[in-house]
Image: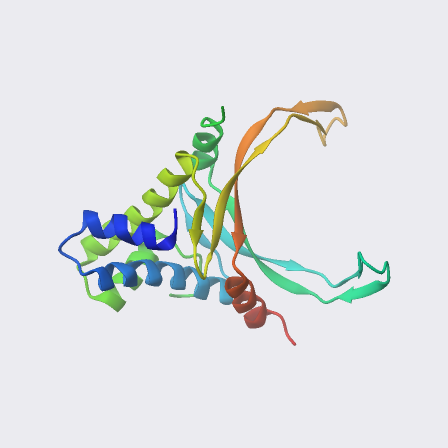
Length: 95
Length: 101
């Protein structure tokens, strides 16, 4: 499913909203999550999962092509942990 | 949005504030967004949200693990897991907001 398909589905279910408003709903949800992470805070959606930020320390890595050592600076990366409920439901779809 | 953990209620509040739908409708729409993402994943589909990231499913084979308390080797059963890969845009926004350069 793509972002555009999510918007289409929401729009079909909410025909009283304009498609532009439906797009804005999705944009506001994703933008709010992004802005929360930019502050270093967490977003917890019970049953679905939680978004947080993880700090990665600087380290010396390797250039896989030349084998030379390169400095990898510290960074902050977005992280998602699946909620208990969704985790169990997803695992049960395994064939 | 304050400094604490953000929940569904905060996302609904943002939709209410920025789009001007009723509070009830705003919270139903937020729930609906989350539900549609979950349902697509439960159908086995990948969910690609441009500018945000991709949720995909990964089937893991059985492997040996260890009980960290007893040190005993125990098999980790095969499983299907959800993984989220943040988009380049999200990664850059988070990193530039938080890592001193």
